[in-house]
Length: 195
Image 1 (cartoon, rainbow, N blue to C red):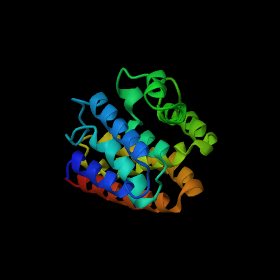
Image 2 (image 1 turned 180 degrees about the horizontal axis):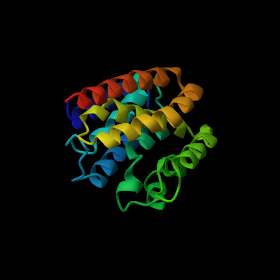
Image 3 (image 1 turned 90 degrees about the vertical axis):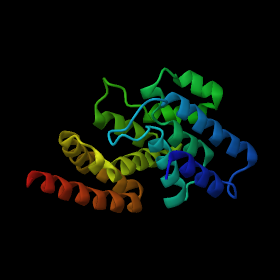
Image 4 (image 1 turned 180 degrees about the vertical axis):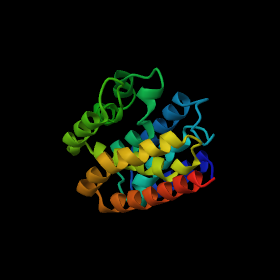
């Protein structure tokens, strides 16, 4: 299923939960993200936009989080990091709540992973932690598609150290999903080692 189809199903799911103006906000977030990630590819060779759309879909379909701010935040979560778009522009195009979530989810190069995740958890009232966990859950689900074994090892290590404890505090469902995906990734690495 391509990202347009995933997004179409997402909007159909949201139609009974959101107002028309909120649906329009989500559609605008999708369009901004699509343009911002245009030409960018994931490790597995798919268009980058498929990832934020899957993150938003996981939030809605698996966790039943329908908050427009968080759905937009999921769609836009890599926009500042991966394009010239600024926090101020997101605030102008959407609102300060969405800009705050996207900014919290933006990993700056000079900030350690531990500090980055601590800041997200400290801002738990924004809802940013669950979006970040859905982001990591999606990355883990497609981790074995990466041709880079060092990346797979790093993701296993950082998930065990930082994301699993965060998920245990935030969402038992996401925690269990991460555990499953870690097992898949470890088995995949063992298979690579025997080749």
